[in-house]
Image (cartoon, rainbow, N blue to C red):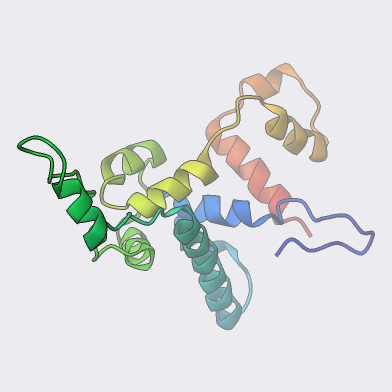
Length: 180
């Protein structure tokens, strides 16, 4: 999706992280595709599928396989000294919660909630997606990305910027992203 423009520069906000961030914010989920993407239904379905694939690809990459203990290892564990030598701690893995099922469940329950409260309540229910959301939605320690957005938009630092509401910032970024 990050394509070069005619002059050889990358278009602003064309990085897939913006699509994943919007989709993993329960306030937006994939609802923005229906309401704000002004193209045919086939293209909307294609964008929706592409965003899902991006999220699932990252969820699969972040999942760590649980180590299996083979029979030889179990026998060697059983030969140790002490009453509980044969016992070892195993991680429980719920086989019914694949990243695809978690994403499907997330898309059904995400309906405009606060992002922090939503992920705090659902981090154990949607562990794979929670890991992706943490990576995608994490706020950097500096304000450099925000400064770049305002610089790109031609807005210079002024006192009115310090009094800007969340809604105004969202509208400014939305207008910049959808400008022709």
